[in-house]
Image (tube, rainbow, N blue to C red; front, side, top):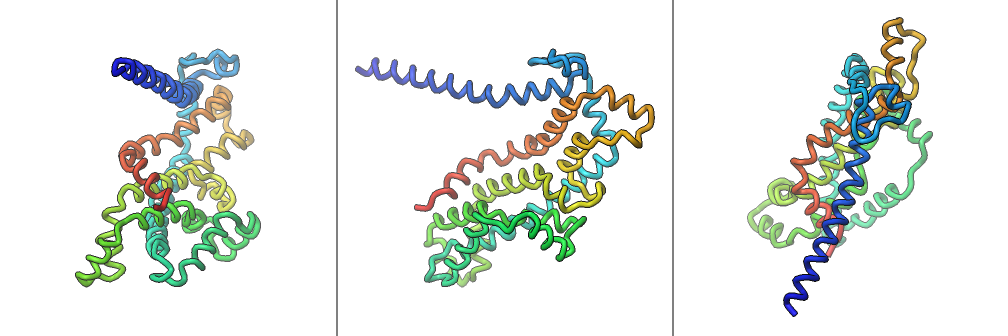
Length: 294
């Protein structure tokens, strides 16, 4: 009987292993193929000769992006946007989530603010009213506009709020007995034990700010204020050849649009790939504990 259960467990484990490996391959193979496209020559890409290994290996697609001073400027704008935006967003999220995690008896206006958040989560005023509002506040072609436009993600607020609700009340009660106020409790008790959910929303925020391109396109009327994703998207879609020298035109003519698109994807992936390993250990815990309230 025991031997039969052991065989069934091994079969089940082997089946799970095969399924998980197939899932891993379904994620890795497209990325690897895209990398091969970005490292292959124009003729090989256009002829469909690239499979799982680069053909006519070349770095021309990456060189065409990296050598552009506009690219370096857009990288700086994106880095500044991510740093400032993450600090601002986390500050707002924590300050909103803590009072909203209280009961109505402790914070009598809680339900009003929650309904406002949920309404904003489900509905929005539309692109044109949003743009007019940003323009009236003088946030066009400014770093503040790029940061504030997506600074309060309601999903992250709800995630952190539910995590705070699961923290034992006895910890706050002990801090109150010791004479701590709300600010001290938040800074010295709540935040230090909330590293998993903070790391999770930090990852969400960084990825969102880094990958977002549409707001940069709408809020910036000049390329000098384009974040990286907007700059690359515009470079690929609206490549301007009218003001190019003969040498620049020859270099561009050697490139493939598919190769440029592939290079764009990997340039966008690099920061996330560098940051994710340091936050991975908190990720599952944070999103699991913050997703469900007991």
